[in-house]
Length: 166
Image 1 (cartoon, rainbow, N blue to C red):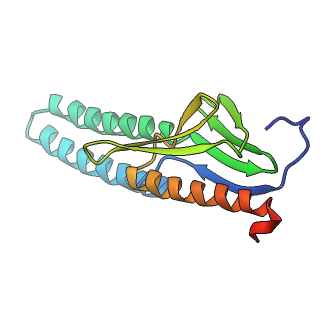
Image 2 (image 1 turned 135 degrees about the horizontal axis):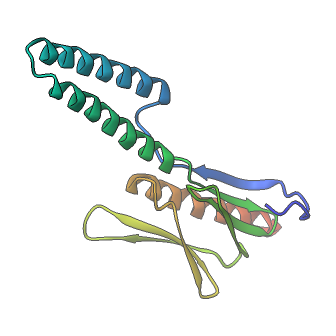
């Protein structure tokens, strides 16, 4: 957020980040086990005289390591969806750490969940002819849940401003 802007107490806030099923400590254990198995198999091939195979066992471990590191790199992205006072904002942090912000007036924000013929979907927030896709890196079920949660939060926020509805 802009440091010069007055701090707003959030009415709603959600941070979205990609799911990774293998925590970093388990990744290290997996790589250690894979390296140990490959080393043992490589030593076996060296013992029978097929020494060039030993290098390929190291190569497969290196390729698995690189694939996991690239996968974990994409986990650095995130989106923060915030409803505070009279601003609905989305802050997106890219894989490289670049930040982008979008602001909407919450009275006019529409939450649109586009269902597709397959099991996928797309979640957008729209206002005054502008739309923004959010949560593109989360699972379709999580986008459905987020759409319902956002609609509920916006309705509660709008109702809180109208004392006749309380």
